[in-house]
Amino acid sequence: MNQTSTADKNPEVMERSQEVDVWWGSYSGWTMVPSFLGCILLTGMIAWFGFTFVREKAQRTILLASAVVWLVQGGRWAWRFFGISYRLTNRRLFIDNGFFRPVRQQVEMSAISKVRPEKNCLDRLVGVAHIYLEYADPTQKSVVLEGVRNPEEVKKLLEKVAGNAN
Image 1 (cartoon, rainbow, N blue to C red):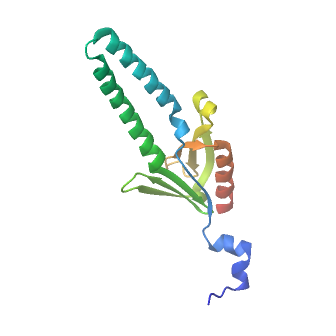
Image 2 (image 1 turned 135 degrees about the horizontal axis):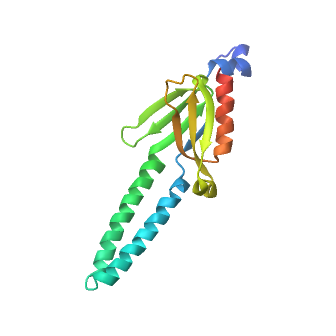
Image 3 (image 1 turned 90 degrees about the horizontal axis):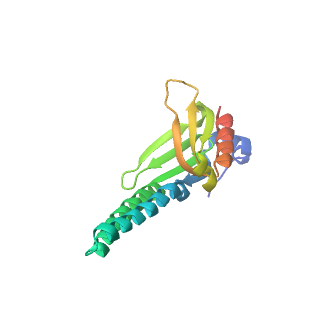
């Protein structure tokens, strides 16, 4: 039988006593649109080179070179898309980076003084940004959340949690 006191049901007490998930996210695949466009351009250049200078075995050359380009790009995408995740609670931000032995970084939100999204013109087009979390202590390096989708919403949420954690 599970017994809870009335104090445990009070949201204010729960907020102070329990760590609750507020948001989770991961690296947005949209962040890599520019590099995918670069791969398309590079594949076209390989095809042009193959048909212009290596006529006899152009198909194999084009296929092999293009396969290498797209395997590397696919690996980069998979590593980021499946290997980077973020979990925000009412107290901390957890950043997992990696597949088999992910490196987990914990950020105490009470130590954060400023949340700053940065995006270039291509990021604006696809709706992503890098979000920088700056510590109140200037000796600590900023934490970067890469490839965050809907960055303005996430920024507001991070600022709210950082403000409440103080």
